[in-house]
Image (cartoon, rainbow, N blue to C red; front, side, top):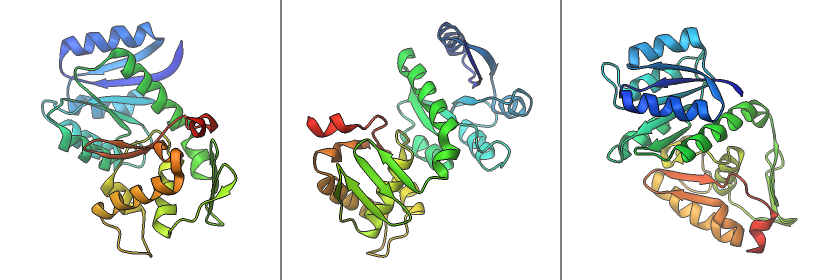
Length: 239
């Protein structure tokens, strides 16, 4: 049984029951369910969850506002958030990710997919501090030294521009996390040429070319942005 506490902020009763049933079935017993943004924000203070499942369409305070309030508060910013969204809310997904949400699941969702996303986000959240302290990063055959600004793939040096290096390090550091183009722009200060949302796509193309077959590790999330394959390994070079 998992010791992780999950806060569910969802106003539809049928979805509440579905989440409750499937989460308990998979060993998540420490659950709290609220049906509004206001109640969810209050519950965070007392329940102290390890992760939050947040519906975007809520009565009163909407999900995006809840996300912004939590991520702008130093006491709650570390709590990972998975957004529960409708297919028509693509723009809200992007806004939520830029506010700091960690992942999203589109309704109607597969319970197996949701459970996998929860476990994945929890794993990443628990290792985020150690990852933040690292200057040398390894993802399978990819080795990145932030201090020396060196990168190699299968022991072969990669010749990268400043922006390409920064983008690769950013994505690889949070493997599995989805970054919007705007998030990448905000974290990459290019000296080789101005970094814009459009130039991010160009530089991703360049990165993939330089990585060869390993370029498949940089995945496109349609309508949102990019992420680095979570379980990238040496076997990916042998396909």
